[in-house]
View 1 (cartoon, rainbow, N blue to C red):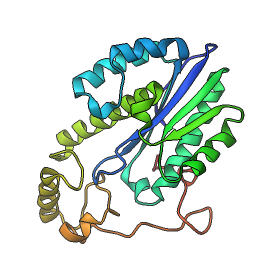
View 2: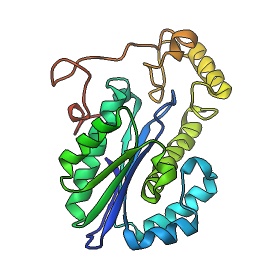
View 3: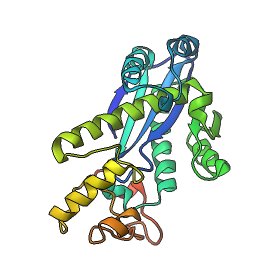
View 4: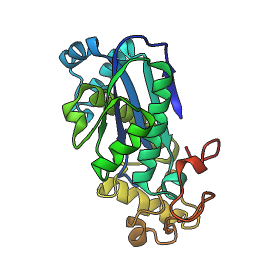
Length: 245
């Protein structure tokens, strides 16, 4: 995990969890957990904290400062393409959210609720989190970032962190566009880099994405299915202390 900010918390809080960058063909997926004091939620809403997709980059940067000023716990997990190409994405999110919640619970003694944007079966996700936060209300809901201030705050944190990675990739690799496989600018950049280096894909490219079969076939590889924990998709636990997360 990266970007960890922790402070002792004795106030009643709610926790939001969200991700940015699940779908792109370039760059990391970032997951964030933010603990917010219950008595700060209204002021954050009035400041404009909402779903990060509804905000401009400058607004997200401004609101990140507001969130950092009141949040006793902000945790960020950054998953790079090597890991993403090796695991089931739903399981990766479940495992990451569990680790984030465990870490939050170590520092916040009064957690009223946890709000998470839905991925996969809602009941399964909720049961995973209830195991690590017994007795705490857990809500996994579609569009949670549009419904709950804490999840919106997490979406802002995750989006700002991912955007900063993308900006660095523009400088280092000449990346164009948003990084999504439907973006013509990104597709053009991939074709150009592939033509120059068909045997050496940049490490920022997700090689298990089907788009590569068409535009950069030598880069494409099937997602690996086995890991140190036996049969089935690999887990984030296979990467703790290693190169993937």
